[in-house]
Image (cartoon, rainbow, N blue to C red; front, side, top):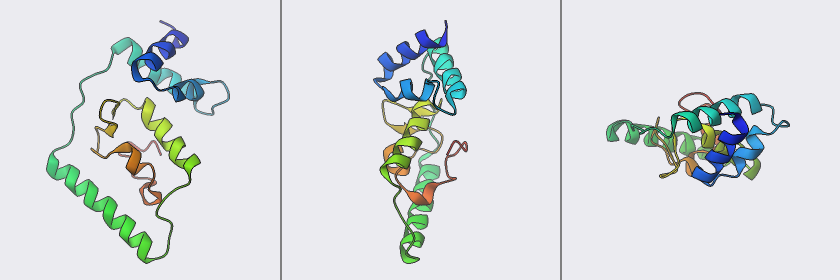
Length: 129
């Protein structure tokens, strides 16, 4: 299977049209995204294991603490829409992203919330953003 066929398969499966942009020639990381899309199409979606509820709670408390600290210091808490979309697009191609639940199976965080927080830069559990 070649990546264009894999891309169509993954867009159909996930209903995520952003994959086309990520795999396009003009995207700076298109090679990486093409490899991920191809791997998902070939291997199929795998069952995702989440961290324990205790670990997920710890992750959430850590994120809330960082948000509170930023707010107290007058620092931004939210990112702009372009950065949010950039992060979410990266999550969409990640092997640990659970499309059905819209959550990261590595840390357990709801992706749409975590990607919007300015305080979470560098807190992708596998360092993608």
